[in-house]
Image (cartoon, rainbow, N blue to C red):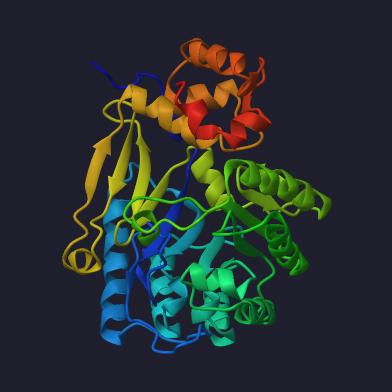
Length: 401
């Protein structure tokens, strides 16, 4: 029978904690999206164009208040005070929030988890539901990092992906974000799109690089269950075409000065996403909002890790977050650590593994030996990391745990 690990977890030497906030509404649901997002209305225009809309004011006010109540409850479960290291507001489409809602949210957060000068605060924004006033409101509230969901610079591809913006709106949104004061911007870009050739994929990447953002998330479109694309699968590039796109894109990003530090994350010097690094290094975080997840380590009565989950439907969440708690067992702890840490190009040290999981390096050895024999992993006394092949086929690597 699986049991809890008995050695101390990293909480003993880490007083910081991250905060994830989920905004579950979008203008409409994209056919590839399996996130917890819910359309507020369908656009009536026959052509894709930038759409400026907002949530119902009463719904928005009630949801923000529920978020703050949820945060109070989460903090009450912590064993001791923790410093806020980062905030990430995702969705859905957080840029649907009004200025008053943004101010209400950040005023409430500051009362219980004060933002400090080094607190990274990221908000996801859709070019089709953002303008300079929206960006200014976030910036003045304390947001210092913006993540723009551009996905492609091809109008035809954007239409296939169900996006509510076109390439002109994407560029306009980026310019507006700069004008609003943002000096740290991530651009989300997909590859392996329906019918996409290597030339089209590299052209997309060229357009993203030309914006001169500080960070770029470049990831392959995957078909997930419970999506429209899953039931009506589009014609995607084959494995050879995907490999050519992947290999060429890595070279192009490196030549442009972007350093790859995670499977699909590329940064300019000093611009890694602190919030996501906390996930990948198996750090603790509080999750609030409909369907939000969290991870909390504790020491008493014995060392352990809780995974938390909130109810998914926004209407149910407004009635009650219904905080569910799952206590990770030993085997879960090792697998979850590896699922996160092996995403990093640098991998992890054996001491980090021991501190974060309670396992010893000896416990990890059978996995290391199997994976190295397949060319998916390399290791020495200093640390463990996936090979370039292992990063490409991480799912296969994790099956060997």
